[in-house]
Image (tube, rainbow, N blue to C red; front, side, top):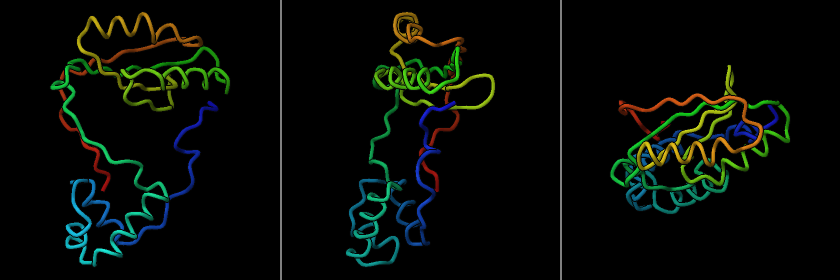
Length: 163
């Protein structure tokens, strides 16, 4: 598969213990002030701020976001959809990715190995709206050979924290 993925990105950025402490603090609460983070990692505010800016510039910190409970914002259905493409070439993969990037229902997309090429995480208001999305939008993408949908019954663990 010739799709552009995170593996195409540069190698890991060299990080020291203080960088990891800062990242851990931000993962736990991105609303902390520079002073609060500095206190947690035992640095003054200026070097803490400079480290955070370096982590942002280097792409270690991709963005800051609020994590929402999908059920409380009228997205009661979560589906993992595996997709295989008819052909494995750069053009078909690029067209698929371009289409997927336009769908607000698709909140995550992974290029995977095995019987399927992609794994999509999809949220929808209810079964009817998911069905409408699947039939009228997702399945209309040219080049899809097969899909397999897995409906989430309940979430046991969900985290964004890597450290």
